[in-house]
Length: 196
Image (cartoon, rainbow, N blue to C red; front, top):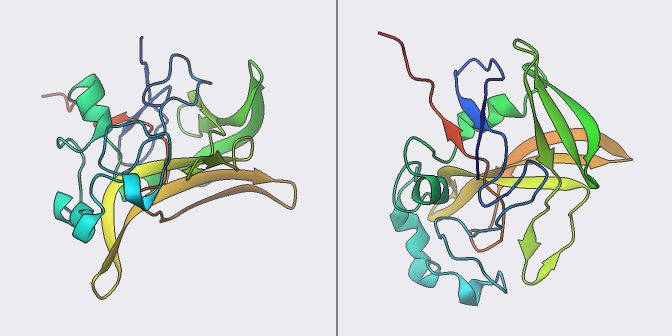
């Protein structure tokens, strides 16, 4: 399985993979995983989440990028890793990228094109799995970032990013908090190697 790097010309210099973790092609959804766990679930529920007891997922750290809890690093090796929230926000920003609705081999999603480089990649609308149901496939791509943030005193949630298309609200990209036991996808990144 060949994974290609795509330079979208983002200000952070991050290079994005041309497909999701576990995907055999750019349009393949790949694996839906819980935050910090590499195990594919049949039921994405609190009871099945490895780290939920006593909120153990908070002990994984506020940034799991390139750690043993990072599915991109564990499956593909370094320097592949989960993106940070800042890197994800640059990726979904209309300031830096153009988002075009596209169907690739029967799969709906976005063609994301970097304004600076003209390079592009495909993002399939793989949805998010809650329990046993994926109710948002064909309209929404939901990805994990490496970061955990405090939402209120004593309450922490992992951050994710969304690329969405609805007729009533097209081209809606944003970031937000996701319950750690939901099944979201991962788009790996690499930092650009600086020339000496």
